[in-house]
Amino acid sequence: MEIRSFRDLTVWQRAFALARENCLVANALRRSRRSGLATQIERAAASVPANVAEGNGRRHRGDYLHHLSIANGSLAALESHLLSAEALEESGREQIAATLALAREVGRLLGALIRALRASPRDRR
Image: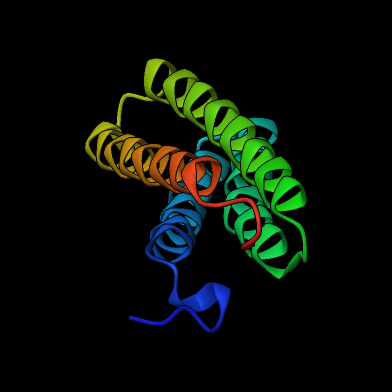
């Protein structure tokens, strides 16, 4: 399959799904008066697909790798926030656990893309 846009990347598609799922988690946290944590979850979750997209739009591989690194850092922050939410919340733990599983999947995909970009010939993007 030819990649013509960041939208064609499986990692972006799964990261976008992760961001959507985290909106549901954040809404549940707001109902239980944990709006600060909800905001942090939303921001970190939105950063992951955004940085994959931005990196894909860059002309140089180093820039792409830099943005994938930022996405990876945002993913780590998101997982930390989700673990905090899981520890604080009595309800919604199943949803948080499913979201954490999706975050781990996105992490594996990001790692694979980073390895592939580092291993590809230097004259190509």
